[in-house]
Length: 505
Image 1 (tube, rainbow, N blue to C red):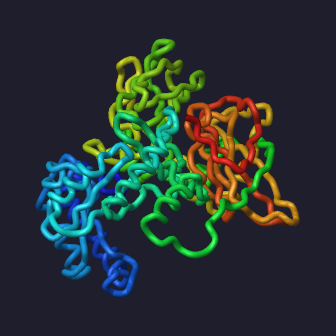
Image 2: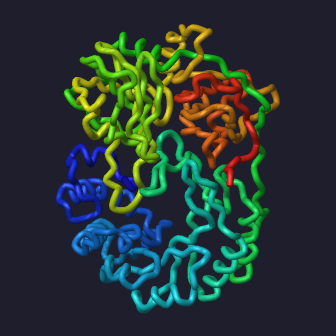
Image 3: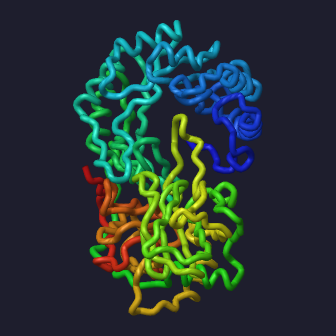
């Protein structure tokens, strides 16, 4: 949803994002009235650090080209921030795009990559803007990764050469990203036609996902020093990291056992409907939702289960069958064996909402009828799968402890797996990376914190960044939790903590 909250689709399933759609504008105005009030004291004119405010992002590249919408945003911002606030907009340097999001009195800026021809690009900016400073709002040292594709790496020589060209034109430049990030929990997105993004947003940035200066950082610094005075003081160095060769993982309760336990306690969010409900209709933004129904007839064996509206990944379970559906891979039907009166369950994962473009209207769940050998299945129960999107509450750990009654001979997924470690007396909690190599696909936690999704067999991301603040000090026990969704018997019931990030090219 391009950073827009999922519940907008609950307000109006047909809402037209980033336009003058009244329902969209009402939500934007309500949010901006709060945000801009907080921003105003920090404007440069008020003695704060904020020198400009962006009206919209790359709106000239968006399909809507709604001038009334852009004018409304600018007017609304000036109402709250004052007429003297400096507003700006940015696009890839292109005359048509700059006309699409044109607003009087706004600073025109540009987005560059290392292959841009600086002189031509800045000329287009100057045409659109006239007088004023030249600014490159986004200059890319890397690019976003996607599951199942090689890690993207930008040629550093070309990147540095273009960077210096920008400075020679006396243009200001902002790196996107300067500091790599992490999509903790379920906050990673996806891109239409490419696929879901991994947890890491390292982006090849000068400061890595863990905040460490890279070789690229020092080279950028050296070039900057030719044109601007460098700050005094010691040049930063990478921070020390924690590593541990092996943490043994043990079988915890299965996902079914945990859900049965919570169901008995009345702790599962549940809804019933003749037809499957989307995540939005059910009122859940992220994670997983379980869909179950009872098959009312005897089908062929195997029968074809068809779920054309799966969004995004579905885990199918019957008494005899385990299978995977994936809209991203075009797998929307699977053979299953199920008898009359038996339960059919599909656990659906939202793998990330589309970030940008005409397909950012991106509901999740099961969005169509489900058929078994052409017969529509009805009378569905939807339940929230108890995997939190940010952190386990303390009571959740207590419930997991209570639910630890699995059969040790059955360690198959989907299941919770636990590993424990403690720091030695003179060790401090430091940043580290969790390496789940040998496991298939799922979600990892360090203590109560959701580190994000892992999928090392597909890559490019292998390790998950763990901030030192997530690790408990000496004398306390740290718990690593894996909610493994796919591998029926992990080949290695261990994980490691390492001092380096692993992104496979």
